[in-house]
Length: 275
Ligand SMILES: [Zn+2]
Image 1 (tube, rainbow, N blue to C red):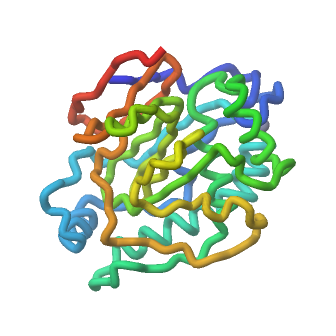
Image 2 (cartoon, protein in one colour):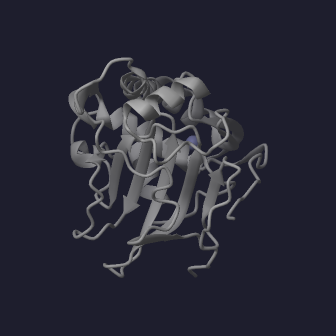
């Protein structure tokens, strides 16, 4: 089971997002303000969405994960004030659809600002793991994007999302997804919690197609560009995708990977090292 429990980190050190030496502050993922879900509500949702075959197996633990790895400017000013409110709005809107007591059309719409949602997501994923700034070609472009020095999402990054009507919280970075038909592994980061799953890929080859909505299609828009983001209630990925092996894909957690899973059920998971 890949699990790295060092979450405190030093009180003073390099910020995981911008790399500046500073007093470090605690990041909370998912950010406070995201909808919570009760076990009984979850049960209704699963029935509503005809997900009876795959029951939520996680224990109810929505406290999320905390890492003391961000400088005050990245954490409080940028994430807390600039990016998280839009992320919370987006996530909670999806949650409201999932929790609806009536049968909804399979395609719903959330009006959202994709750049702010993506900035918040990347910030929280960066916060994972102690002293993770020096990752060269991955972290430097994210730092510039996050600080809005370069206003566009870096070209090598793609971001996807899908409704996630389950109660486990999963977060991982710097692992590799291998599609068994494609033979070329790609670096992925992901974050899943009720009600949304997010997948970030790096240098993804053209031929990959996950069948979920790509948030990074709005990579070139301005930070306050608002659009109608489609939410497909009929395209729900497996509860354990992408972290658990499927018939066609497998995720490797190498030395560099950091993952936190909050369910008790043990998964058969490759512990193979990629490096
Ligand atoms: Zn910072």
